[in-house]
Length: 173
Image (cartoon, rainbow, N blue to C red; front, top):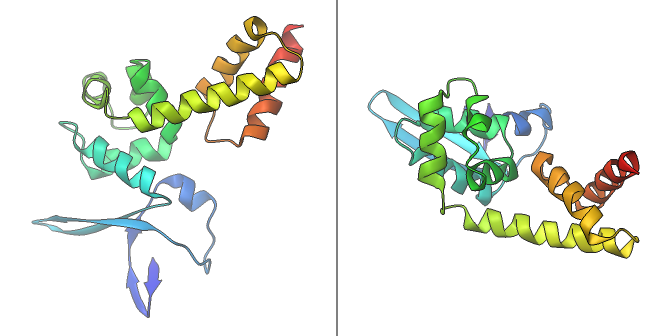
C-alpha cells in the first residue's frame, strides 16, 4: 500500500523493489495505470528503463501486465536483454506462467527493440575487459570470463563485476 498525501494506493511492483523496501520507507516509483473494464491497476517501477521494459513485454501477444511484472520480478533488465539478444527463450520459461510458446514470442517480438540495453551491455563488456587487461590479464584469457560474468550478472556495479571476474579467472589458473 502506497500512501500519497493521506490517500492509500495498492501498487504492484517487481519483487526486487519489495526485497529492498520496508514499511515506512519513502519510495519514488515510476508508475503506469492500467485501466480495464474490471478495474484499475497501478504498477510501479524503480526507474524509467524498467517501466519501458514492462511496456515492451506487454506489447508481446499473450503477455499481460501481470505476466510482464512476473518477468521483471524474476529477471533483471540485463538478463532480459541478454536472453533476447541470445535468443534464449528458456530464460523466460523459468518465469511462472510463461510457457515455451510465449517465451519464444517474447524473444521474437523484442528482438531489435532492446538496443539501448544491449549497447549498455557491450559498454559494460568493454569497460570490464579493459579493467582486466589493466590488471595484467591477456584479452584472450579475460574475454571468456567477462562474457560469463555479464551473462549471469544482476545489474552489479563495475567493481563487483571486476571482483567476480577475478574470482573466475583465479579458479582457472
